[in-house]
Image (cartoon, rainbow, N blue to C red):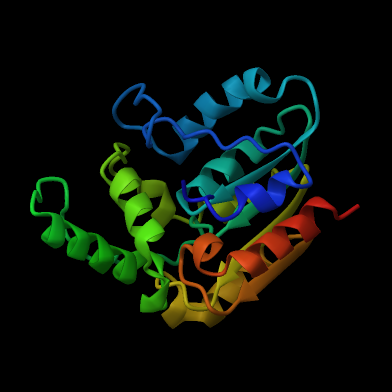
Length: 228
């Protein structure tokens, strides 16, 4: 659902698969104690069932960007490109924003306000971006995130993994991402270390830049996918 404003634009040019990762949304939680590396193993082992023997590109958002980085480090057959969006695992994350619990909130108004607060605190930069669809996606997805204790996002794992990528790699981040807004110079330096074929820092978007600035995000993604 985090790709709600991107799938149609990408599907106009490519076949798009948007599976839920293990432990998120409608996917089962295979076991406790999962993190980006173990989720990557599960996804990588099942990729042939999804894409068959054809070449494919891998795009990951946020925690999914780190999972995708681990998959790319395994050099699965057919992987042509990796694109990380708002990627973690650069050794820069400090304390995460404190979010309001919504799982047991039964009053509709109070629940909606808590969802709005969490979107503002973590995901979206401009309060005007918090529309009905964003709140609905947050309501459906946040309560079904069952992968807890994701410690690898706080490490510099992506930087280490990038040395093992054998495909072309790209990245996009937002200057207003709450996770990096106060250390943008450090983010720029870390991104340079990844050896990306191309990267972009955009304005008018928070951590969930795919939603808040879908037009520029989609343009960049298609540029990367068509980069020969």
